[in-house]
Length: 152
Ligand SMILES: [Mg+2]
Image (cartoon, rainbow, N blue to C red; front, side, top):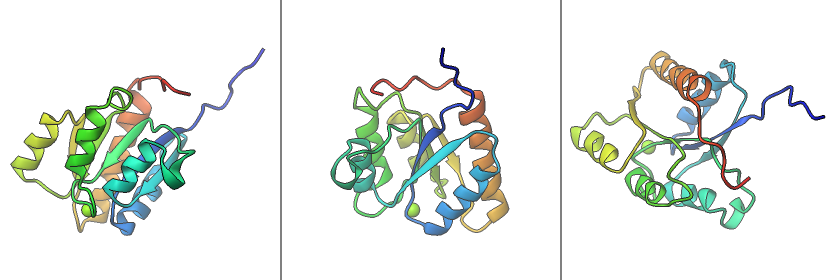
């Protein structure tokens, strides 16, 4: 008989070009109760390489949750979102748009492309940022039932 005493950590893909925001995200997740592993990529092209397991990401984990910034170098988050939500293998993965943009156009466009939720972070207020990540952790990682990983 096998008993899983410790739950398998959840894999989170953070697509974010700001290293400061990456570090704050790690800090905030460390305080959460859910065991998780954060995978960080800095632009949209690398995000797709991770999701499609290309190049140096050939052994990448299938993420349970994606935190996606909109404004990214090389390929922006809107395009990444479109790829994810039009791919039958990827579209079940919840995508949280995490951006400083409050532009109505960005909000509407993200939901039109089937973002699972849209969250605005403050570009300057660290306390706000930490609280945003904690809230995402409490809701998406602790409360929500996530889809089972199909290919593992
Ligand atoms: Mg950015």
